[in-house]
Image (cartoon, rainbow, N blue to C red; front, side):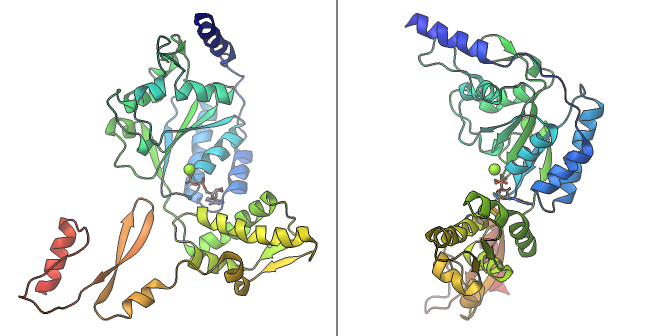
Length: 359
Ligand SMILES: Nc1ncnc2c1ncn2[C@@H]1O[C@H](COP(=O)(O)OP(=O)(O)O)[C@@H](O)[C@H]1O
Ligand SMILES: [Mg+2]
């Protein structure tokens, strides 16, 4: 038993990438090309990434800021991180912080603890196989705080250039140098990130896409990717722009393009079946086939439907996952002249309803 534990410990020590690979110089023009190849639009953000890479190239030992991509799901935060790794020619590794509420998950358990293991940071380093990897700290805003110590305190140490050269994982018991890791964080919202942690990062906001941008992204990237993922050649299947627009409007409701990509995949798998059966060599998917392939549309034109009833007004709302519309319905009923508010309204909404009644 004891011998087995020591062996596991030694394996960890041996397998960790202690040596620093030689610094590869980043080709800035090539980096620009890679960012464009992977992502449509996002001009300002790509520009900021290029600046970041340029500064790192000129001052490889300087303190680089830690970038944090903030925005709704499916806008490309994770995939931008992958592109950065590709542009820098370094391995990419993702650490999911969502739901982490125990300091030991970051920093590991002492070896005296049954079933002890290093924390996620050291595990990620081993997975990357290089201590100059690009490490994505995904969903840093979803990190909780439990009774077992505050994980954000451990995170602060990981991200602190003064301290992270001698990062101490409880399991390893010896310092490990994290100072050459390129950390990139992502978040849906900023309010839940503890202040000191937020101050350590440079926030880059991704707002979400318009319908036209989604169409461009679908046409240039998602369809191509899904063709490949489903074993189809570009000449075997196509989806018309009108069909793509319809999918965006009636089958998805999101700020990003994650469900859009999933629905395109579903439509193309349908084509893949017909081609694999040998019944045809080319499938063109158009608007009139969508209902048969994807089922009835999920989002009818709700605004028109709901507001056709007198007394219903349309409101705009903001949530961390994107914009939305909501309907406010007023109806009159016999009674003693009071105002009843239903739904879980906050103070501001209650006051607004009172103000509307007064008017
Ligand atoms: N501007 C864009 N151009 C091309 N593809 C994009 C763009 N934005 C998002 N995508 C694609 O959408 C999918 C979801 O993106 P992802 O990075 O997982 O989003 P997030 O991490 O923000 O939730 C990925 O396949 C990604 O490549
Ligand atoms: Mg993501």
